[in-house]
Image (cartoon, rainbow, N blue to C red; front, side, top):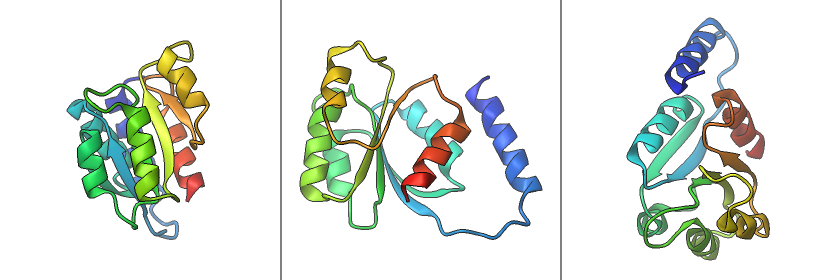
Length: 141
């Protein structure tokens, strides 16, 4: 199912279920060098989270603050990759819950490194539903 189709379905469900009690939004930092992916994630997650979009390690370190509860972090990025970014974010904000979001399945060297880190999840791009991601992130709050 395409991302756009899933987003349309989610919007329909949210409109039809709007009688439910409004909950407060979590605060999410997205870090990915692919602007299209960041835009799609923002569209998918905007109803559930206050979102700060960043496109590099340096930008994420500059923008992260105490209000951020969760970071959705790409592994492979030019310059400082997700592993370096993870460590720098944790130095700045120890309680930040970091979820990796990558195109790499479990047999890639970087993924093996990530498995040794104390993260709060790993999502392989294109291998999960939007609702699975939303539910996982909401469960971390």
